[in-house]
Amino acid sequence: MNALLAILAGGDGRRMGGNKPLAMIGGVTLLERSLVWARTQALPVVLAVRSPRQMAWPPGVALALDRPGVDGPLAGVLGALDYAAERGFDGVVTAPVDAPWLPHDLCVRLSDAANLGATVAASEGQWHAVCAYWPVAELPRLSAWSAGQNKSVRGALRAISAVPVEWPVAGRDPFANLNDHAAIAAAEMAFQNGI
Image (cartoon, rainbow, N blue to C red; front, side, top):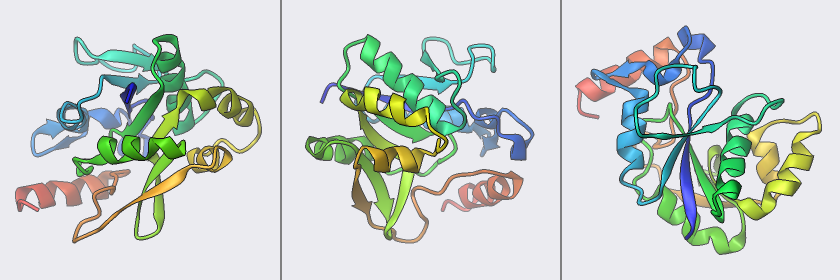
């Protein structure tokens, strides 16, 4: 599969006081955790970011800039697809910077099902829209769709008829993401307890 992995790291993180990628769990930033996980996925890795000046990014990591004029995570998805299209990739797997327990088989399973087109991770019937495989061939349709009023990632996936790929949940949800200080504190406790 000629795809790349884009870590969506451009969000403001306002509920966390800004710079969500630098939030710490167990002495390690969410960004560092994401990159360690990403390097196990056997795909080229790019960080989808709002701006190169958003923060000090790790050296040697490629940056894809969010699509201008689009808000939220969809800006990162479209920016990563633009980056992939310019470099001859067939698709992009996206994953968020704020989900420290992502499955190790995420990219393999999403891209293995890519013969069906776009795919999206799901557990217990719920879509995890920022964990998805996006074919570059869908870029024109996604660009046209994003010009409308609905800018949700879930809506974009529905617009291109994404197929869910189901993961079992045994205990903690592997797709849990951390959006506020309470979630960070709970994750810190979980890591301290080896959960």
